[in-house]
Image (tube, rainbow, N blue to C red; front, top):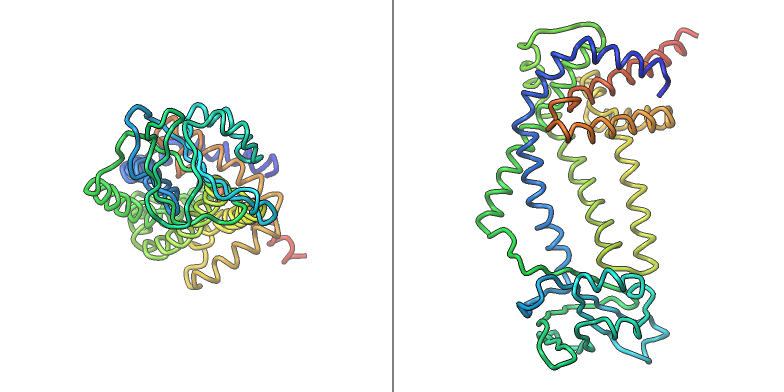
Length: 343
């Protein structure tokens, strides 16, 4: 993002700070509620992924935090040893993490609370320590050849089923309120950037006008980016093998790709009211890659603004100033295309 764009953005923010803070106040309740429910529900989702193949049915109360490691040998080592499960105290696991992924079984056997070979049956497996005391009872459904799988167990109980349902409902409602409002907020902010200030009634009319399209776009990108994040976590932290690292790397590039598409979507959604959402996303993709370095730098500034917003509970800079940055950048990009048309 060139220096002139940053100067224009800073001038815009300074002269419209009251409007930006007012917008952030309107968004404050759904934003904080969504963040709160995400903080509570994401660990539930991670736990679900962790226990897809391996779960702790029972654990010795003496051990509060455990790490369960399942190592399956590759095809060449299959005759030397079978599938093994190690159980570590969490602090001990942090010390031998490197040995886990290098397959240094000598070190692992010394540091582990208990270990056991994994039988072919899916019966519950009791793992005992060196004194014959039971450490934990596990259920291991399947182990991929040549993979390392790790799950963490904490004796603190998570959310109850009722709490999960309540948090899920609140998360959905806050997401609908926030995601549906983004298009209208962007419309109002766009008017400020293009020196067409509107009153507060216009803001609420804009939210109503763009609500369904904004919600549809937000839902699409949330599902895609959420699926990519889950894949990256699964292939890096749950299954560790050569192919899983490669798949995780592909997912990281996909994550960047969709961020670049998302960057311009909301401003273009407002400017292209008659076009389908699919055409708007294709247009956003074109603008991103036709101005790749500019978009990357602007995206970096946007991420810094949003990270800074956490310290003020999104009162400032907040989402409104973020949209101000994007629309200022779009105004700069649009002027380039206008010059090309004149030429």
